[in-house]
Length: 221
Ligand code: AMP
Image (tube, rainbow, N blue to C red; front, side):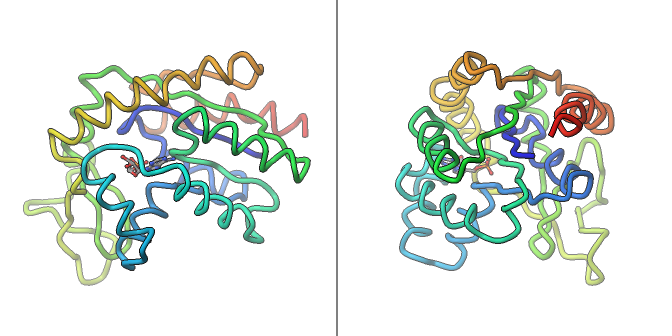
C-alpha cells in the first residue's frame, strides 16, 4: 500500500500514521520528523531547514525532495509506505508522481483529514513531545501529569513543546496549509485518488474511519 495522509497541522496525521504501521506492515515517512532529525544533527541541509521550520514556512522543495528520494530508496519502503506531511505543494506532488512512475509503483490513495480550525488550534497548543522517545502527548486528551513527563520512558523525561507549535508560528503554518497544501486535494480528486475523512473525533474513531477507507483498497491489491 502506498498511502498519503494529508491534512492541516494538528489534524492527527502523525498519530494515525503510527497506528497504521503495524496494521499494514509499512513504514511511516514523516518529512517533518526527518527534517527535525537533520536539524538536530546540524547537517548543512538541516540548518537551512530549521530556519524555515521555525518561521512556519515550508522548507525548500530541493531539500525535502532530496530527503524523500533517499528515504523512499531504503529497503523497508519497497513494500509500501505512509507519507505523513508530504507532499505539501504541487511541485512536490508532481515530483513524487514522477519518482513513483519511474519504479512503476504509483500511489494507491490520498486521505484528507478534515478538522475544524478551532479544534486544530486547541490540539496544537496542547501538543507535547518526549525528547527521548519522540512519543506525542496532548495535555487536553492524554494528561501526562503536572509538570508533564513521559510515562513511557523509565527516567520520565519532561515533555517539551515543539518550537513551531507556539501560537504565532501556528497561524503561519495554517495559512501555508490553506494556500499551498489544501489545493492538492483537488489535484488528487481529479486523479480519483482522494478520500476524505472527518478527523475531529476521538483517536480510535478516526482510526476506524481510516481503516474503513483503506481495507477495501488493501483487498484489491
Ligand atoms: P510537520 O511535523 O509535518 O508539522 O512539519 C513541521 C515543519 O517541517 C513544517 O512547518 C515545514 O516547515 C517543514 N516541513 C515538513 N514537511 C514538509 C514538506 N513536505 N515540505 C516543506 N516543508 C516541510
